[in-house]
Length: 615
Image (tube, rainbow, N blue to C red; front, top):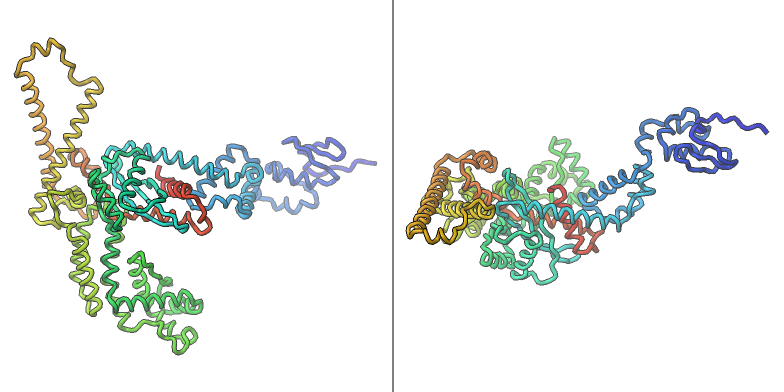
């Protein structure tokens, strides 16, 4: 029987080894052969895509597919995955899980596997690890990131500021969140999340002290390197900060954002205001729940040429969400009222969803009254610039804005009176200075070239603050001198040790002369520092729009001692927002699908998610 002619170009890549076997010339793999070249075509497409794309003549069954092959086939069917390529892909998946806070079980999901198979079949078949392997990789990544953060913090010459807060997860497990802030050598604001420590004991002040000291020990940070701690007004946290202040001298600073929350919430407790806000929430909820009302609202927005913004529902834990809800309702008032008047949307007898005219008027006044507080909240919550130095000026500005508000309704006037009282009660001491106790907020303002004239203080207090800065600068200079002398001695470049003969020949006036020389040198150093401080405070303030950190970067050489003080105080954040961000991230990690995560893994995943791009 004559042998059938082989026209397919696939035979350029295969040899027939036996009657029912063929062998690939490229990878030497043997395939079963029963008269059809389909298996050989599929092998080339899966394993040797370049060879497959070079083919021109194909079997009738695959001719149509191959004729339509293009660059898309080359991209979607990559060549065989090498171990090195596999490591890169695995690392990429790990980064995705950490950055996007996805559950590690995702790698075992069928949809994920199918997606990876489409991207790279060989990686899927031979290299894609399972959940347990990614858990080990995550732990290794945590160890590496931890060492990088620890090394970075160890190289910081200045002081640190901490923020701290306590949070409870979905699984009713408590955690202490601690973040660390400092200024780098090039005057850039830096921050790291240190810990999301699981808590098993009562959250007493004494226990919080112990836990915070454990966090510092973990990163080998000396307590003397901490300048201040920013925290909320919780009684246990206040008690802990009082103990830490007595034990280590850390300054205790209450979160400005939390203080604003308390002031505004108290001012909104007026009965008429509460009713108007309750009606506003009910109106928003109606449009959130009713698909018909929501659809008709979009139509009215288009007809009236109003922005197609959705309504905002406020959250009790964030007062400024109430401001945003009011602002959005007022923006959408016309299309809202028109939609509610449509009988198809609002049946007869249910027009109570719309606000009364006096309630709309009250919302207008509340928007005006709350606007300065919203501006203050946004400014003080910033993390890339210094904020604590501007706090006294913000408090003065809020007092002025509230006092100058011209609200006409009785409820509006009640809001203003309550807000003004709250500012005075909670921030009354922010703009006063006592020589007995260091006020880091005012000292930060004094070291900010925008506010160094301290116009928010009485003239006699300004002189006291300048005197305190001078004392601190002299201490800083002396500490630097002693450190320099110690380094010289350690390096063998100091004076040589006296011999027995030197001691015998030394006169009574020799040691006295040395002491006088040293005292004279110290007096000169003190005078240099005093001149530096006087020059700094004599200079004009810079514009409020200028960056004080950039100014210090450019003038560090002119004020070498004061620049060190500035790094210690200007790194203090005005709010404990970083601690809240920790818990926001941890909340995303401890989702309903991941509620069974161990406390240890919550701690490590949160640390990675927030520090992954910082080192």
